[in-house]
Image (cartoon, rainbow, N blue to C red):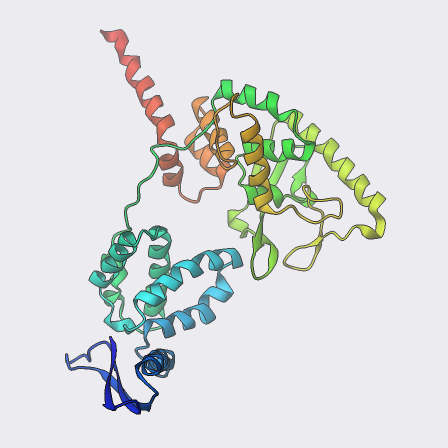
Length: 383
C-alpha cells in the first residue's frame, strides 16, 4: 500500500510505502519527503518511490522481494536452462506473478497467498493457471536449492495444481473420415500433403515435422529419428531445438509413404542444385548447415504458424465434407486409430514421445473405455 500526505500546500509531501510486516509483526514502512507542484505530481513521485524500493530489493541478499528473486531466477536458471520458446511462454505468467507479489518477500509467501493468487486470476478471467502453477513451482524449487527458504517452508508443497476444465477426449478422425481426408488432401500442394501425412502416420507434432532434416531419415528401413523441433521465437527468430538424447525417438512409417517422401526429397535436392548460390540453407544451434526436408526454394524453413494457417484454409474449404479439427489433432487421430486396432499402449506412448505413460492413458481414455466394454462383453456368453 502506498500513500502520501500534504505537509506544505503545493510544496512538500510525505510519501509512505507499506511493505510486508517484519518477522516480529511490526510495521515495515518506508517514507520520503518530496517537493511537488500539486497532488498529481505527488502521485507520480509516489509511484516512482514505490518502484525504486522494489527494484532496490536486490540489496536484501537473504530475503529479496519477489520481483528481485524472479530477476535472479531468470539470469541464473531460465536463460541458460530453458529453451527460448518455453521462456517466452513463461514470461506472460511471470508478469502476473510479479505484479501480484511485488510487495512480498520470498520468505513471507505462504500457501494461502498462492491460492489467493489463483483465485484472483480466475476472477479476472485470466487463464493459463497450469502454466502459472508450473512457473511458481520452479521459482520456489530454486528458492530451496539456493537456500533462500528451507524445504519444509516451500509453499508450493501444500498447493494443489489448479483444476481446469478439460475435454473428455481429443478431437480425431476415425477410419471412415480418414479415407475422406486423403481424397481431399490429394488436391493440396505436395509439401502440404506430406506435412499432414507426417503428423498423421507418425503422430508427430507440428514443430517436429518442420524440424526433419535429411540426416534423420533412413529411407531403407522406413525410419525417421525425431530429434529436433522447429520453433519461431520473438527474440531469436527460427530456432531448431534439439531434443536431449534420451528424448529423441525413432518412428517407423509406412513403406509406400516413405517412397513418396523419397521422391519429394530427390526433387528438393535438385532444387538446391538449380538454385546454386541463391540457396541460403539453414544453420542449426551448433552453426552446422542442415538440409531441412520442408522449406522454401532457398532452403529456409517454413514458419510453424504457416502450417496451422494452411490447415485452417483447408478445413474452411471442405467444411461441408468433413468435420473440422486442428492440425495437432492429426496426431491424436494417429494415436486413436492404432489404439483402436489393438496396439499396446506402451508402444503408442513411445511413438508419441510421452515421457510418462499416464499422459498417454489420460489423453486416450476414450479408447481404453471402449476396450473395457469389449472386455466386459466377453462374459456375456455366460448368460
